[in-house]
Every structure is written in C-alpha cells, then in structure tokens.
Image (cartoon, rainbow, N blue to C red; front, side, top):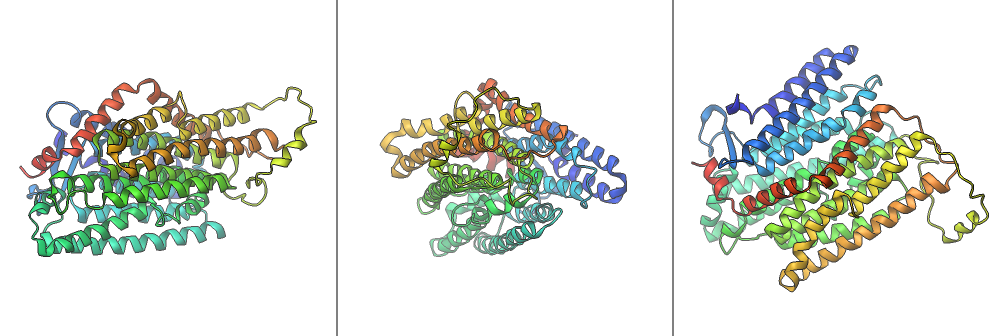
Length: 521
C-alpha cells in the first residue's frame, strides 16, 4: 500500500465522484456520505504523505506509472511542497463539509461529484512531475470549477461565469503553446529532466526556451490573478455560491504553486548564467502591482463577496512578489502566509454568504458609500444596552477574527505569517533591492487598509445599519466558519512545528538536487 500511496489522492476522488454520479439526485444521503468519507480519507492520505516526506532521508517520494522511465512515462512526485498543498486542500475540503451537508437537500445538479473531480484535479496538479500531465489535471479542475461556478445560475452568475470560462480557455491555449515550445527545444516535459537540460540548451535555441517558459508563465499568472491578468477574479468569486468561492480560495494557489515550483527548479541558481532567475523581476513587480490594485479594490468594495475577492488579490500579489525575490527565508514566510491566508479567505467567503447571500445583491447586501457627515446621525442615539441574538453575535465574532487574520494583526496566525514573510526583507535591508523595499512597504500598507475596509464593513453590518436583515443560519454553515477560524487559531498556538516544516520546505526548493536525483536515479 505504501508504494501506491501517491496515486490514491487522485484515484479516490475520481472513483467517489463517478459513484456519486451513478447514485444520482434521488440518493442524496448516500452521495453525501461518500463525499464525507472521501474528504476524511484525503486528509489521512495527505497527512501520511507529509509524515513520509518530512522525516528521514526520503525528501521526495516517486511513483512511476507502468514503471516506465521518468523522462518518457507518467510520474507522480511528492516532496514537502506538494504534500503541504495536498494537506491544505484536503483540510479545506473537510472544513467545508458541514456547510455542504447543510445544503445537501437543496436541488441543483451534481455539485458533490463536481467537487470530487475538482479535488482530483487539484491533487493531480500538485503531484504530477511533468508539464503535460499538469495540463491534463489543470483542465480537469477547470472543467469542474466551471460547473461549480454556474451552480444554480442567475443572470449575474452566468455573466461572471462566462467571463471566467473564456479567460481560462485562453489561458489553456497559452499553456499548450508554451508547453509545445519547451518540448520542441528540450525533447521532454518531465520537470526533473528539464532542470538538468536547461543549463545545456544551446544559445541559438535558448531564446525559444525562454519564450515558451514566458508563455507558460502567463497561463499560470492568469490563474494566480496577477494584475492585469486577474481582472476576472473579484467579480467571478463574488457571484459564485459561498461554499464554492471558499473552495476556490485554494485554486488561485495552484498558479502560485506552479510558478514557485518551476521558477526554482528550472530557473534557479543552477540554470546557468543565461537562464538563472529568468522572469523573477516580472514576478516581483507584478506582485507589487497586484497588491496595489487589491488594496484600492478593498477600499472601494461595496459588496462582501468582492471585498473577499480583493483580499485574494492582495494575498496572490504578496506571494508572487515573494517568489520573485527568490530568497529561502522569504519563501518560507510566503508558504506560511499562503496557508493562513487561504484558510482565512475561505472563512470570509462563507461569512459573506451567511451575512449577505449572493442572490440578494440589490438592497441589503450592498454596503453604503462612506460618508463622514453621516456619523452625526448617530450622535443623539440612545446608547442603552442592546440585545444581540446569539447567531448574530457568532457572526460578529467570526467577522472580527477574519479581520484580524487577513490584516495580519496579533495575536492570530496571520500576524505570525506576515512577520515570517516580512522579517527577512527587513533583515536584508538595502541588499534586497528596491523591489523588496517596495513590496515590504505595500504589504504593510495593505494590512492597514484591510483594517480600514473590514472595520468600515463590520460597523455598518453589525452596528450602524438597523435595516440589515440576517438570513436564517444553518448550524452546518456556521460550523464550517468556526472550523476554519479554529484552524487559524491552532496555527497560532502550534506555530513552531509548522514553521520549522515550512523552513525545511523552502530549503529543499532552493536546493532541488535531491528532487532531481529522486525522479531521475
């Protein structure tokens, strides 16, 4: 069983999703039970992989399908980074399970099978060791996401969903073009083999290799929502159902994962003078621009879903800028920020769905524009103690916790993650360059702007607006929010072990020789 452990996170959701389709809508209880069992099993499998590659000398586990040589066959590879992403995805899916079970009696088509196919695509993208199968799994997760984004369609959701589909089809076309150019130059698409071949590429074809890598990078920058390629994200995520948008919080990290993997494996220090750190400056300054756009969007957002979407842009921009710096300590901090921001943003999307359902975009769910003269209206109000219903109090406390985590304020794990990300930039000083200084400044400013945007929104919803109507809250939906925020709190208390694992992961990424040796013995 240990030898086949790597293929299980792909085969399991595929089999469960197919069985759920066969059971159909009439047996929703059995479909829900299968989905729950799959999510629990995926967490166990991911945890087993984390333990396997995180202890001892085996830093990368390899599974060669059909026992073909890695350069010619299909190979799955699990190292510290891919195991981390598998665990994050599985934990997020399990945390969203109570919300999914609370909505299982609602009609709406094969949502749970699509969720399983989405998990299959995500797990395959994190485990694959070659670019062609990365494209295959990329298309699987995108196809599933199309169906989930258009679940229970209305005019607004269809409009945003069609834009999302068109943008990703263009990105898929660019993916194929980039992969074709790379294969034409090197004769292989295996990542480890490419890492060995890049320094040996003749100078007369190196420009073609760089062109293919750049086109491939654009395809993943669309998924990572770098400005100006991420214009689609806030509108699409705001229109999607709340649990779907919460699951999509990890989908933007697929692009970040691939860019981190390829930039350090193919174009790291060992790529030769002509190719080392290729594209790093574009990632750095593109990340800076993305953070700036996300900050402006947060301050101007008048809808909770879009406010959460612009938080995704700030998160993606910070991560892309950190990847562009290509420093091990910064990479370790970026991985910590990736985990915490994914959990916090997913919780915020769920909260947005509880406070202001997506179907109610006219009226109560729109936030009022900021008017400083309007504070005078509350000057003479009765300040006697008000009674707050328990569900609303829970939503308010959860909103406050989300605000602290997203802004990176103490004592939550968001502060620890941002500190781990920013401290190496501060210690590096002028030696890190103007880009690092700009990124450091913008990430700090983004934290303050997040406080402003979240405080303004929270005050209007939970305090100042007496006409805000809270919809009925199901216990399962509230439980998912609580679980996600509890995970953020757990990462605060148990920070030492995860941070040590992430530091070792960053060190492994910046010294990929062990990865290459494991795949190509």
